Amino acid sequence: MRAVICGANGAMGKLLQQRLEKNIAGLVSADGLGGVPRSFEELGDVAPDVVVDFSHHSAAVDVADYAVKTGCALVVGTTAHTEEEKAAIYAAAKSVPVFYAGNMSLGVAVLCNLAKQAAASFPDADIEIVEIHHNRKVDAPSGTAKMLFEAVKEVRPQAVPNCGRAGEGKREKDEIGIHSLRMGNVVGVHEVHITTPAQSLTLRHEACDRGMFADGAVAAAKFLMGKPAGMYTMADLLEENR
Image (cartoon, rainbow, N blue to C red; front, side):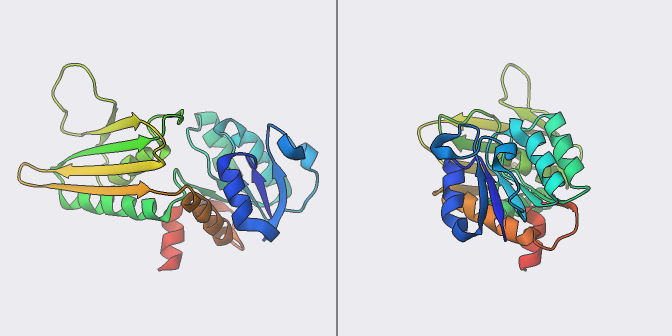
């Protein structure tokens, strides 16, 4: 497997370099530090099998175009995409295999499955999602919190998100509160609270080391090898590993 890492000089990019080592076909980083190419044009023809993007969501269109032009697979590790950026990613999936997940942690994928199961088991329960991250994170709610909401919505199609509840008014029956906390150097904590008048169930995942996201991205890249064009998620990876 020959991989191009986009966002190579970032924290996740450096972790990916440690994991991939001899499998690295090229590096790209907008800052150009250390002589790393600033763009795919500067990188040139390196014949990649996959491009792994941990740069910034604003680069999604360029990264998707690069994957299509080179015919390589694409692992999207960024979040907070605009509708235009999402459209570019989904368009690329018509030509190449694309792995798109709001979180590259296998544990979070399991959490999504558990949240969906719990929501189905307690159809009348109130459900609230809480996410906690370091004080440098720029988007809220997190991509993972959105993933958890979408997982619950699969069994509660009428569900409506309420991000950062404020003001007056009772909690609506179909709403799912999503709350974001930003503090210190927290890598990432996600909780799903399922509460009925008689009992409460809390599902929690805590990221202790950012390396788990790099491990998940590498697993995703390997998973895509040999796959036909299409959109793939952590659910597909988990299903293949059963």
